[in-house]
Length: 240
Image (cartoon, rainbow, N blue to C red; front, side, top):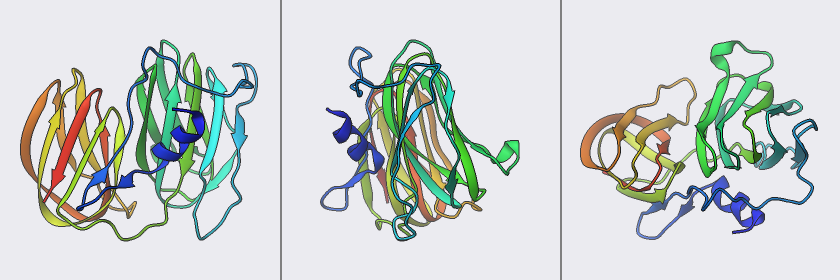
């Protein structure tokens, strides 16, 4: 998969047929990621591929690339969900944080905390509008693509999702008590939690398991929400 395909596919999940949401994201094979030849060294500023600001499309997609620990220039975000697609090489932990320049510590947003090499996608809630910077801590080459979706209506239930590794399920129109069935074929954490469309609402922790898992639970999920999946293997989810 080349860089252009990676940024396109991981920036937003694709809708499948028959009410199926398909999320994507998988650990790299052997730790290699494809990247442009002009990726800067750790002592240089991370490069940015900008997209003109548009109220009709929201922020982004905007891609940041670099090597090693770095911080970006400021960019403006609005309150609401933000998606992050990432690919990282190296041998150490990878942390991606959005720091609210005019906010407090508790208003900063962690987009990813994982072991490299890896690739995947996650969604988070921006609580403070205005300038932000992206802080990266790692020891290898990395690429992060950020975007703020503008959708307000999600897919209706029932819905299904499947993927491999860290990923998110696109907006689902939850409306209260929901039966959730999940499976995981990995050996590490399997964490499933919702990210409400409204940043003032609280998300729900649906599953928090380790290793291979298959089970069903009932959760109270009110309002349109994205669903984050933290996994290291193949997984499936169904909502009804």
